Image 1: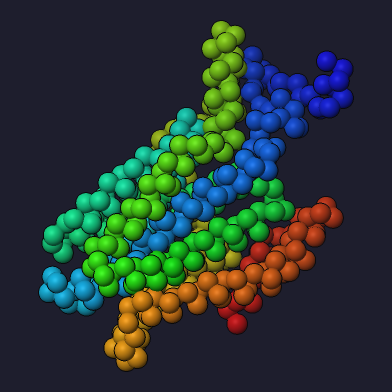
Image 2: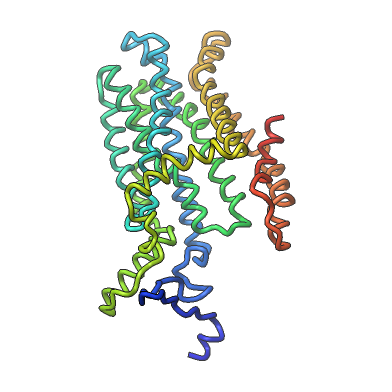
Length: 365
């Protein structure tokens, strides 16, 4: 016991006036705390979340390369054909309104919404690949975006669960690079296969990426600290027979009330945007960049197919320039982040949150 005392700094449990024993971490180096996990386990989380994000984002743009063939087969105009991409993005936007609050329910955690929605996404992808009419295909595309959105909404939260505050900007850059690269890679993959197999092959390629992703999700450890402590308190109550053991989240009414959860997910974000100009600027700027980026997938075929007369595989390669851009900006982003954020934190000074916008301001130029 003395050896253990010298290795760990033990923390006495906190007891509330009503006798409730708050269940927390056993020590500063508690291995149950995601921030104390070994490097290989953190790498597993990063690999899975980034792979998951890549597959979902790939499903959005892979249709753009075969859109012209789809329009020809079903005799629909450009405005209808473009919905194959637009409705997926609409699903991306609406889905988090439901699934983000679910991941904050401590009894669920982050993983169950990932697994359940990805199973539904996989089934929808199969149906999308065999449906034989344009309206049905477009409805299924929206549902693909809707049920694929959890990783886009809470993927960053999963990474933050296992990453220190100093290293988080670099981890989020990696995640953002996967999110940017996937839509760029997808037309390249779809361009080569659709020439031989037809437009439906694009959906089968999405399915091939989804299956291994789903299998790996079953091995993804739960990263939410509140959920881990909730399960620990539940185990302690079962083992000891003492119902006084409770996790802090069980005493937080905002985590247990459905109305409070809905308010936190739907009302508070809009309130923050309305009252904080910095947040509003970030929201508008992100939406603008997102819209410009995805507009390329509609414009490029008009330019490189109709004007430059490229083949589909050749045009698909043009999209890879987005990856080159992401990798080019990496050293500048890391340098600015180090001097503007990481170094002040290491010296004991916490910079204002707005300072994280410096790379975005430089990027606007």
